[in-house]
Image 1 (cartoon, rainbow, N blue to C red):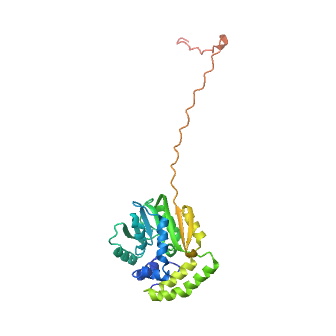
Image 2 (cartoon, rainbow, N blue to C red):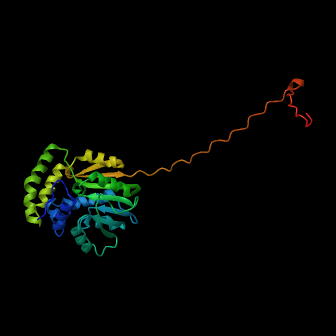
Image 3 (cartoon, rainbow, N blue to C red):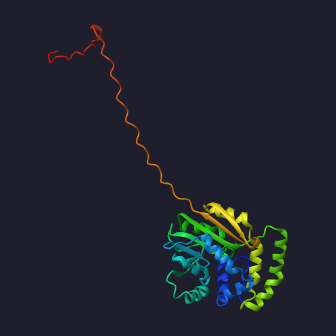
Length: 273
């Protein structure tokens, strides 16, 4: 059984998710105690997909989140690094014309600049070896005026809830993972990666660093999960440089009157001199 570590080497992470792909959604429902569906609905509302828009769903897994985003007629590109996840997703969403699957590295997205109206990632940024590089890529492929939404595990701000959640991660979740998952060891990595993940203000700072504006977050389930959102600024057209105004010809001084006004003339010698 594969288990990634906090170095988050892409090959290790991909192999781990390949192994859990078949029962991934079921296991998430069990481990989240049913909250996974609520988090997905909140993320979809935060993205606010509209018919005709093009949305990139990074770390889309089996496409459950992508299908939710496409429900109103948006075209969704479901990108994931794991070939196993992509295969399961393509089978499950085979009849959905609004969802297209692409195997892709989040730090080197195979899309042109300014392509998507919105970019979103749910519970995947934490698994990327260089999350700041991924956020820079999200910014690059988002259209000016478009938005980014990140749904990720976070740190509950209330100390008592934080302590109880930490106890669940260490003692409760491993028991449930052994029952519900085909690769319980993978969920040891889940616990480790959640505990090592930065808090809400730190992730907001990363989004601003990538170039997004109006960054804000909303806590879900007492801060166990946080939704971050930001917008790519609309590019302002550069002002056309004005041509320098033509200089007005200097006013001629009035000619002086009288004999003194005459300038001496230079005599042209005759050929005979």
